[in-house]
Image 1 (cartoon, one colour):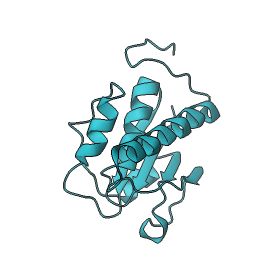
Image 2 (cartoon, one colour):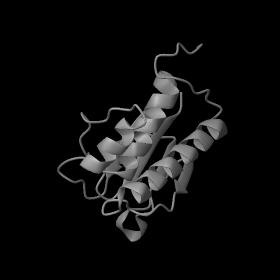
Image 3 (spheres, one colour):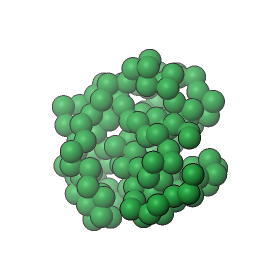
Image 4 (cartoon, rainbow, N blue to C red):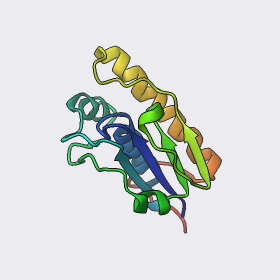
Amino acid sequence: KPSVLFVCIHNAGRSQMAAAYLTHLAGDRVVVRSAGSAAADSVNPAAVAAMLEEGIDMSAETPKILTDEAVRGSDVVITMGCGDACPMVQAAIREDWQLPDPRDMAPAEFRAVRDEIEARVLALLARLGVQHGAPNRSFPP
């Protein structure tokens, strides 16, 4: 099964939401990781609240520092618009999703970034050939 690593600077918002969407939509059909080049102390509460609106609880998540092991263990590495703050990493598939950091955005703007992340995760699943569904769905082998 494919493994995907989402990277942003603090691993507190965009990369956490992307990882939560991918986990929610793909279940155990994809190995999902997220990390930050300068990991924060905690996940942004606004990101947690925005995802709860979608029925996805990521309140137990914690930011993780980007490691060489996480990169080497990933088939797909997606950086989240962090520019020079994200190191160049090698992966079979590498993409940079140019997304603004929603950290200080109003709720409506934050939701727009969240919704763009969901659309990109759905497109990624299609490119990877992975079916998606509700998290409790039983996927065929």
